[in-house]
Amino acid sequence: MRMTTGVPIGEFSRLCHLSAKTLRYYHDIGLLVPAEVDEETGHRRYQPGQAGDAHLIRRLRGLDMPLAEIRTVLAGPGEQPRAAALTRHLDRMEAELSRTRDVVASLRRLLDQPPKITVLYRTQPDATVLRLDGRVARPDVAEFCRVSFGELFGALAVAGADPAGLPGATYSAEFFEQDEGDVSAFVPVLPGRFDTDPRLRVVPARRYAVAVHAGPFADCDLTYGALGAHVAANDEALPEPIVELYLVGPQHTDDPGRYRTEVCWPVECRESQ
Image (cartoon, rainbow, N blue to C red):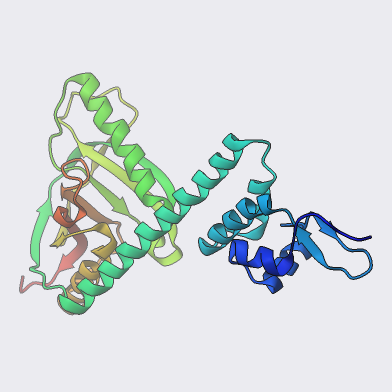
């Protein structure tokens, strides 16, 4: 059959800046099918209007969108489903870009400013708190804390009460060893104010070695490392949950660089201290 419509693959390649080899591959997998194929020669011809899809494919591949998702986008039954699929992918890309920027910044801080900490010792008395507990995987801990503190501070607001101390969270040894374990978010309250609340707990007194972490939570491991090394050299570490107290956190500022977190390591101190 003699073809008289459309443009040959070489011309279409110039229209869309995709190589002929790539166009053949996209044809083979059914992603971008030519308007016509000569039954005798196998020569492909494309309609110029297909350049729009070709341009979209090229850009989406540049954003590392999987071919299966691109096929779904192109097969969408209208502009709105296509736009929604593109928006979802762009949101994922922006989240990944943000994560990459955070990691790069953390690496630069590690190289430029090795952590210098001051270790203090404090015996924390019994504390009455509202607490929410969960078994949490490491990637989910930020969301767990966001939701939990939202609920806890919401309960205080309904009761017209202020926190009786710093909000905090505890992290079990298993959380660090297995990347999943028991995590608790808490807010101190005055005794007697929430006696019927099922979230009410009494945290027993404990002695801690304490260091302040300055900056994003993503860098908290540096302070953990320095504090843990100090404890190993000077104290007897207890297998109790580590406590973080949030002096300055997301409830105070949108700038993670201004965060201040007390890391409290449970210890039995040696007699010389």
